Image (cartoon, rainbow, N blue to C red; front, side, top):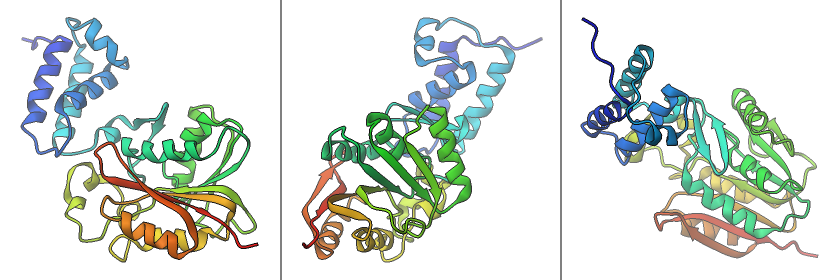
Length: 288
């Protein structure tokens, strides 16, 4: 006798209970259950509220159970659905990139506040999925974005995300930080580089366990890439250009000191949605 298929509301209740009994860190079991069910149904979230009594098909129920089992093992939702929303964008993700996080939107908000909509050149270093650069490009059609990543596969992913979101005011290229940018100058440089120390217990928690260490870990207690960008940015910034960096919540003072040491003025740090210092920035005033 074939097992009875559940309604959407029943499937959600089952999935939420399963995930509540799993060690998923700060993840919300209900949110994860809803996202994965919408993925199975290929429907928006509102569908779950509009049709709670609809029955899943046999294939949908089987797929959903498999996804919940994988999520129970800790695999990130974004890796299961192959996408993640960021800003106003839908981004494809892979296991070679960081999963875009909402706190990085703080960096986007700050960058947008530093210049008006007039045409400027902006550089995003270590673009990954393209999240930061594409968010800026989508909000400022007159800006021209250049985005770099050292990995050719990641560059291709970022380009596919530009195409997916119909964003054309961006050029994405393979470059190890500034290596492929000789002769280029920008009004603003932004970056969310690796900034976690190699022995951090954070690396063994939640979704981070499934993300590439190359996108997470930096030498010198997490400061090596931040220091490198700060030290070399002056060669690529125009006078009165801004450098805007995401960093660890305990690194604000070190990043501010590095910015000041390399001649940046108006150095400031701002907090993320949890109230932690997350983004620091400064203006480069070049000597006449």
